Image (cartoon, rainbow, N blue to C red):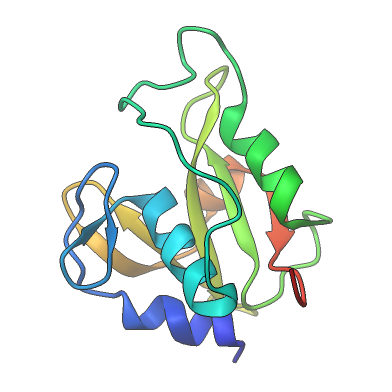
Length: 143
């Protein structure tokens, strides 16, 4: 397993809380990635402005995708590795705005994510979830 997966699993059970990033207290999907980043590298790479649940939707701006490109390493969609950061488009035509960390690959893949109403969970990366993946990234070796 990778360090990112090990760290993500420490967050399992953390309640879902919009805009939060505190292991055990509350987080959303971006907060989960921010927390893993802090544990891997120290300070976050940039300040995250306040955001609403529908952020980027009115403008159609792919803000999360752009931020991922600035700080993570792009990986091909068809090369799943444990520790990959997954970016999801939850509805066709909508902006991509859900994140998770690939935990397991192979015949029963899983991913760890903060999901509204569920908190941080490790979920099967089922076909419906796989169809929503629009980008795959890796944490850099160093920053």
